[in-house]
Length: 230
Image (cartoon, rainbow, N blue to C red):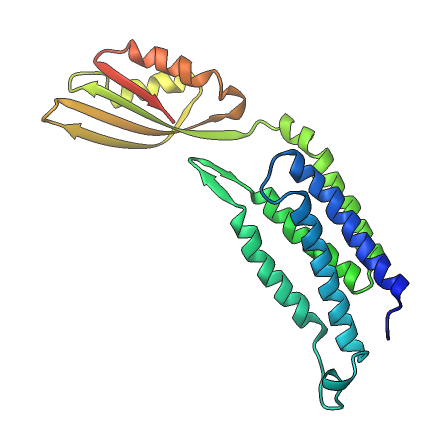
């Protein structure tokens, strides 16, 4: 079935609108893959879907037309999704204990799926997917803020050899409702100091108050020379 210009424009128009709507949210948060990236990804996937649809329907003549050739309509789309995985992986960054870009990568992947829906003529399915995506990225953010999420940090304490013990540090942190997940211990007999590295877990809502509060408490403990929170 040969597509007419109106149908092609309708599919590409939906792709452009989808990329525009979803890309605006990422652009507003300063993400590397923002408005233009999302628009281009969705339109490219739509064009790939149109090509795949036309290959399968036998609308292409000449080199693409043969009685013995049986094209797989999913092959081109599969290649697009594989390629988009590299683009998505490129926007995921690790900064210390924080991983950023996972939502952006998911959005790029989802936008590609929507583009393939439009390209293969499933406009209603694509439109429903767009509505669900808008709900997810625009309206679920306030709900995320209500969830008491765990957060993680690294605490390093340098003390004299006779200074505060690991057990005393553990008790102090427990009183502040901080969970110690892991402990590493370094003993330096030359400088006569020891360093205790603690991996901590606490609620994100306390992220601002805890570093200073913990530091003030620990620095008052016997033999503590330095406290570092990361």
